Length: 271
View 1: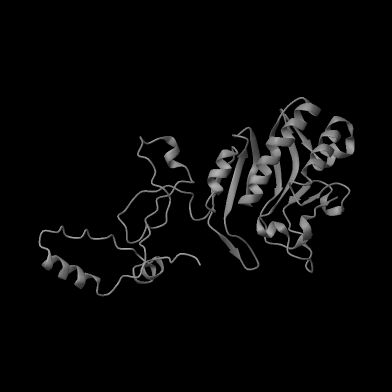
View 2: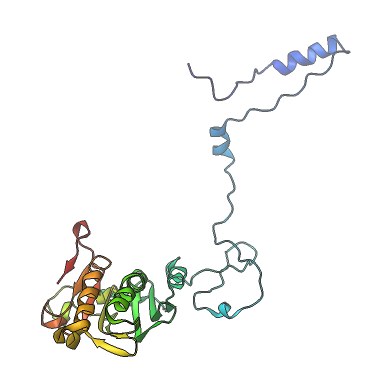
């Protein structure tokens, strides 16, 4: 039999001890025993008081240029003394700003986009990648995970391919489309596009060194530019779930379409 969780105290034991003390005044008084607490009973009657949840207070330091970062915000916990805490702003998910900054992405958190069936809960406007080494022709409004995937793919794969094939790094992207509230290919009866969720980006050209390699003309001309574009397109299949470009259909002859559409078993669709 398992030992009891706590000991039952004898109800009249203190009375007997008092009588014994009167009968023998010289005897030492019995040492009080530490009360044994039943955790289940105590938990039911005296709930534990837990500290409020929140971000760890930032260590005081001298003001710096980073203090004006768009990913810094002051948070006040209700019912507690006012403490300055730093975290990504409400418009971005809790780790978005930190993750993008670690990837060298220059982006600004935007207010949530709610446009009927379209929208982005935590949008960011991306201006550059790879610590400003890769400038975007126009800011791309994307869902945070898509921005992370783009930055990682460009840094880990595309830059190496550009150097190996064309002898120079990528210095710019020509953005053909990012967030847009529309159906696939703009067709009235088609399903909602991943662009309508901020989970897609269209790239029509890569600036390599000091010149542009356009998807449409570079693909058709052949040579090193075509080899670079074909390698880039193939490497995008995996990091992105949908990859479309020249030859896929008439809608994607002049750009690469990259998105994070969710499919059964994590399958990809690359054409």
